[in-house]
Image: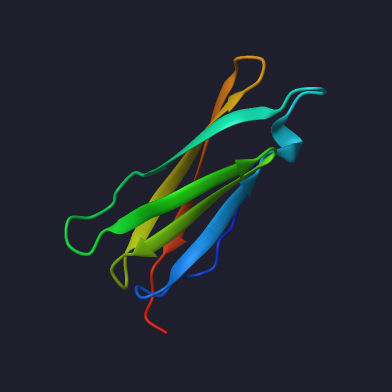
Length: 96
């Protein structure tokens, strides 16, 4: 699944999403989704504020981050048939 997110200003609090539609076998839904910032940073980290799931779309609200840093954001979906799928994308933080 190729997901491309636009740049985020460090002061933005924004929602981003993965749409799992193309990943799901027929009749299978997403039961849960866990979001992780793989390299959050220690000073002004990129933070997962909240997340939501309305299968097949998993949404995360992110805040913070440092301008000029690229963060790897991962979503692990657990499917109704027990499968687990991990996908990762990169979010660039940039002053606007």
